[in-house]
Image (cartoon, rainbow, N blue to C red; front, side, top):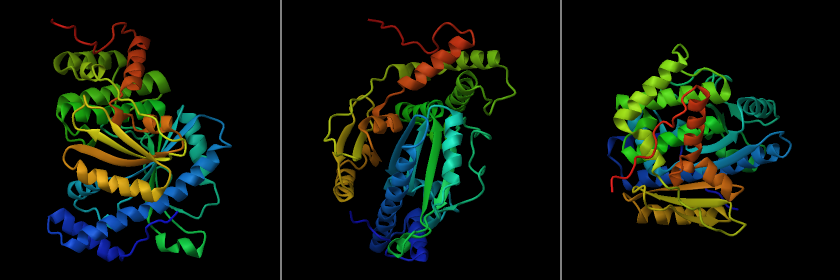
Length: 354
């Protein structure tokens, strides 16, 4: 399988990033960005193969998926973070690991850290540990950033390209994907902490309730009593109905693909009522070509993303936001409220007025 190799210096990559940020691009700047982004596929392939190999001997449930950051998302991040250089953007390549509980998550991560791989971990173990130190948004999980270091001379051209590994439990993942779904439904930017106070606070409280009920750990709001959180959550829902709107969504079907499909191009229309379109591919070259073709076709009309996983079900779990499927989040939230004595479902489906 042939992979794109970086053809430009890091300095040229950064100049292209600055040009895109400033809206002053020339033709070559687009070529530089696309080559730099495509070069990360080799890194993704290397890491995901290592992770899947280690999963075989892991005592626990583990879903692994991969994705290449979309061009519009890269540009958005460059504009949101003025000090960010394109060559140091660490999440263009990403692998997502979803575990049944925190204990299993930490066991696997510890084993991976102790492996003989030469790749360089950026920062110390706790630098991006958002379970120990949850974000003020309510986000929880752990991120590890690595610089690729080749085992053999044939891979040295990719040395020092970065990749982000996201470790989440199913509870943490359900919350994070619900945030992305509600961003689409409400047309806000909660994921990037650019939303109004009501929805921001409700999802922070939801994260806290899930952490306490399902993982017996405190979140960002550790000092607030559970009873107060429940009442606040109900008050916000009564005013804005964000959870009710999530309950009204119907998830899209994934479709059926050849068993050899390991890479998928997902087209998620901006209209939440429109089903996700997906194509499956067995090889990298065909998947990238289709991604480029579909991204051009649906520019401004839909999100197009290239993802990968060993099983189709893993893709749907890892990217439930693309299927408008908040069912796991809603189930966990209802169970949390019931555990804390709130028998009535928060955010019930509104009754029809017809």
